[in-house]
Length: 207
Image 1 (cartoon, rainbow, N blue to C red):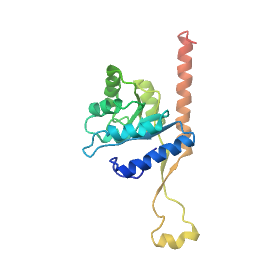
Image 2: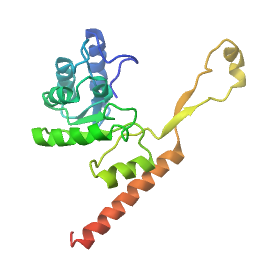
Image 3: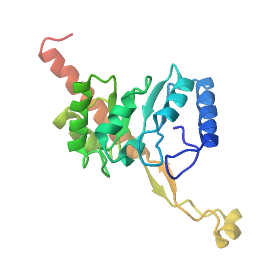
């Protein structure tokens, strides 16, 4: 994830320079791909900024992230993303809180990408768990990739050595951590999906 700070997705030239340096560092460390999203002041896809970042990322895979969901018109946003050579995916919840809630737009977006002939994959994200992943894949059959964190907010334990800091308000907030049980549940669904698909392939006389 190439993101210089929390907050909006409108970046200054200095922030873009930081993002460019982060992309080069990711490449040096052997990253498979990078994820970012840039918007203009009026909430449109910032194609000029994206082109700079994509150029630095080549030949890595590039995903345009959920800045897409902040735009006002998904068709116009899709056209803009597709106009930047090198972006391979759009990570989106369909302008909704979760991918299942945004399913209608995800279906329309999938059809739109196909009709336009865009070389883009759709990557559903937000609220992806074992139940929603199975439903998205088998009930609707739209996607073969998904984005998820398998995490949750937890209260960090109070360290006696930092008790004074806690009294002063340091380190009292929640932290986001990976939940191994959630990740195992998702992995179980993925394995089950693969087994089902392999069985269906053999039943049809496939390889």
